[in-house]
Structure formats: C-alpha cells, structure tokens
Length: 120
Image (tube, rainbow, N blue to C red):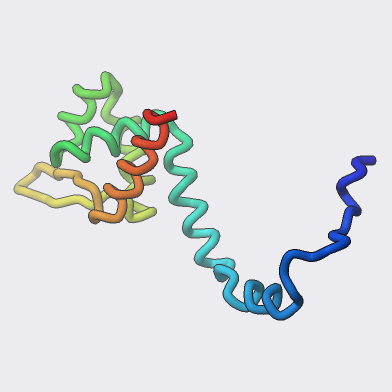
C-alpha cells in the first residue's frame, strides 16, 4: 500500500474557513464536464490539425480534405464532432458549407496551448 494514500497534514497550510470557501467556489460539475470535453478535443491529432487550419482561413469540407489528405467522410465526421462542442461553426453559401472557429475564445485557447508546446 502506498504510504501517501492515508497521509494527513500535521500542519495544514489553510484553515477550515479557507477550505470551506474553496469548496463553495469549486467549479460546478456540469461546467467541469463541459470544459473537460473541450480539452478532449485536443486529444486527437486530426482535430488539432483541423483547428489549426481553421485558425488561418474559413474553409469548406473539400478544401479541408485536400489540406489534410483525408477522405470527405472522415473530415465531415470530425467537423460534426467539433460543431457539437461549439468549437467550429458553419456558414452556408449556396450549396457549399464553410467552416470556421466558433469564436475568439477557441482561438485563444488553442494558440496559448500551441505556444506552451513549442516553448517546452
């Protein structure tokens, strides 16, 4: 058994008042779940490439298939997943559907994480 599993602080850093305040202000479960889902998106290299590409320019599915060297079905599947999580949005122009990032928050998160990876 790991000796740290049942370890308790002999000299707690924070008082019970602070612990109660932290518990009260803890992120609600639905919000934590939604945030975790967004970060799961970045767990797939194809989705990362799609997001990176859409940082540069709004594109249709056909153009994305060309950039990624993937089939239309696979790209469409990933775009549907990204759309359901509000990572990308679509705009229809005639028969063509164009995809772009949903808002600047997505762009900021992605760029920050990309800079973090490149820095380390």
